[in-house]
Length: 337
Ligand code: FES
Ligand SMILES: [Fe+2]
Image (tube, rainbow, N blue to C red; front, side, top):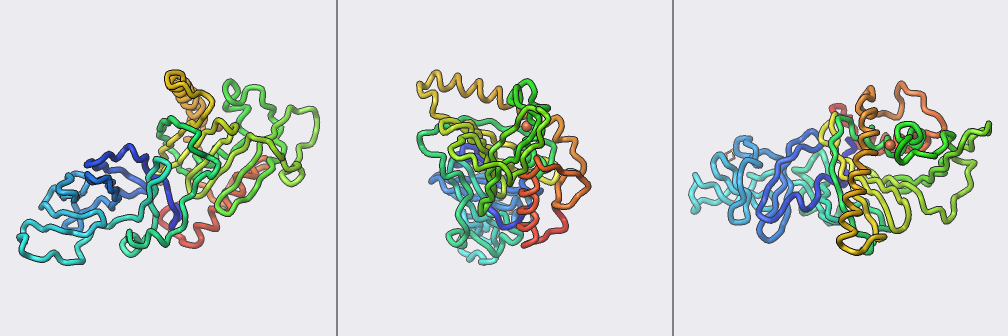
């Protein structure tokens, strides 16, 4: 995994007030909980007393209470109550659940995935970089979403959404119908924290495809795709319709997709619901066309240099791998990919 990045890990609605949820992310067990005032926290799912999973506990007086000996933790992770010591005894300051810095925007929960959350702390949140997001998604667009579980490393799941070579084959009867196999470019813009590219496939009439630097800039062309590190992607189909995916790493072998359709074409509520039902069904069909093959990749995680033979049309994947390598090299981790 790339360390020290803001990752989407959950949707806001998955953690209602006065509720907690245990989830695995980055191969680590986490507990997300929200108090009755709506304040959200994400802890390592491990009680600092004797290692019990806090997600088996409950919310009591706006604290997360461990089920084993009843220690209570506030939203910052600080232990406030040790019942066995009696309320008259001060709680030692060093007893703290490990809390990840988090932010909540766009109906997503983001955490700052760091190897050192003990020393990063909620208090440092304001000094961390801005969240990755798509500035062109405004309030006129409403969304409906779905989730899908892939038995694949998240780098493979992301690269699949940067792969335009596969579209006429895997999706020959859905989004790839009528799309030619010859890949020009694609024209690609490298962003500070990701990339955008403009697909321009063609039928094979004997031509030599244009490389990414030979394709003229597609000024005004509204269909393009953007990836933002570490785990967000948008298919800008048109101004009034987008597909957004958050690729959430569960561990080195599993990825959870949060896929949303954003649109402002259909505004009448009943028709909008029907539109979203159809779009979610269609998107799941398309995703499962991909999933069937992506789950068979060997090896599961990708590297910049590995035993594959990429072609010019794989340019967005190559750029993703380069940037990922650069970001990973800032905080290398031999244990995970
Ligand atoms: S293990 Fe949690 S209170 Fe003892
Ligand atoms: Fe696909």
